[in-house]
Amino acid sequence: MRIPILFFCFLILHITYAQNKCRVANKKLKKIEKHIVSGESKRASELLLDIESICQDPVFLTSIGDVYFSLKNMRKAHSFYLKSYELNSLNDIRVLSLSNFLKSSYAIGNYGVFNQIIHDPSFNIDVNKNIKVKDLI
Image 1 (cartoon, helix red, strand yellow):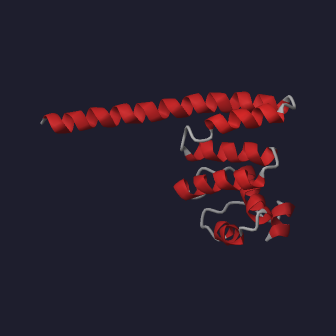
Image 2 (cartoon, one colour):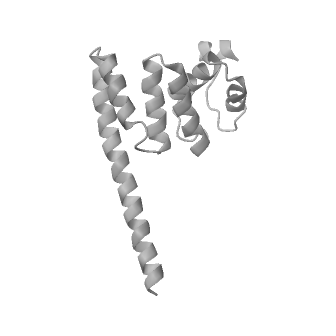
Image 3 (tube, one colour):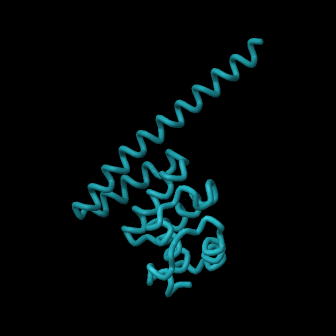
């Protein structure tokens, strides 16, 4: 009887700790976005390196991808979009982020992932309204 109770307690503590790490990482991400808006891209990049591996939540990973995309670092942006996609398909990726994911896939020459995304059943971009994505396809 003790072992299941101990296991359950460990599981609850682990989940709580993981959620807390993501909450802290999201707060730091907001500060990074403020640095970018104020033109401090170098400082933002330094801070980004500190938090990019703290949280493995798909929404957080997509946000990191968005920040790297805005910093014009296509390889890093693609890496984080891909991690998010592998964890939860396109379910947690907003339309703008999905568009950026496609652009970064194309920019670094990862055409296999590009094709996988546009054929994914969850693909939700109206290509007729998004000319840049339509041109890529």
